[in-house]
Image (cartoon, rainbow, N blue to C red; front, side, top):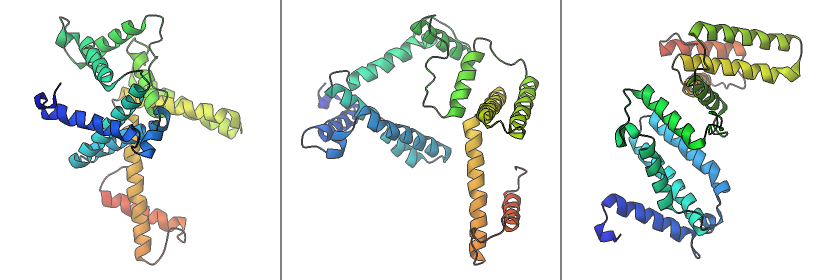
Amino acid sequence: MACSNMTDKESQFMELCEIMHKLRAPGGCPWDREQTHTSLTPYLIEEAYEVADAITDEDDEELKKELGDVLLQVVFHSEIAEEQGRFTIADVIQSINDKMIRRHPHVFGEAEAEDSAAVLKQWDEIKQEERGDETSILEGVPRSLPALSRAEHLQKRAARVGFDWRDEKEIRGKVREELDELAEVLDRGETDKVHEEFGDLLFALVNWARFNRLDPEQSLDRCNRKFIDRFRYIESELLSKGSHVREATLEEMDGLWEEAKSAEGGIAG
């Protein structure tokens, strides 16, 4: 396709591909030329998290930049694959185009889906058909997901075929049971079982969150942010008094923590 016939979007995308090709070509950037799929993996993950931060902060300017960084990673990986004769960026785009049409027969075909739940059920059924009945329904949940998110995805997959708790009270009881079992192995000094029991407790908590339509990763992230804000308040107040957290007593820091908590005007812990 000639550039003169391209839309602005197509022209800009082609320019990005050409920039990446030049960076990887002889005489291009030494760092870019050295990269592999493996070496770039941490950057791809990092960029995805930075997109999530921009969304959380409702910062459109930052979101625009971070989405560009993610797009660059897609083009970068595709350029490496094309150099090795494996696939091209056009193959990547065609692959996702085909998948979106295939998995939305209620839009591009004759199927019907009345609500989001029906869409998800249909999506899972189509995905399972693509993999074959001999493949586990848990197949495809990324191993590199954060553990809390992976637990949630595994539980959701199982729940969609009916392997789930009957009600929220059952899960609440399971959380108490796992907490008691963790306390027991700690009291008995059975250090070899602590990791297993702690994992069971976290898995039960993720189930509890999922059943209540809570995202455990987001919930923990909110808690992290709250901790950061309150601890920074402690640091700031101590510095204003000519002191430092390294010199403060636990009682002093606890008092300032309660001040920060009260200033928020909430009842959160």
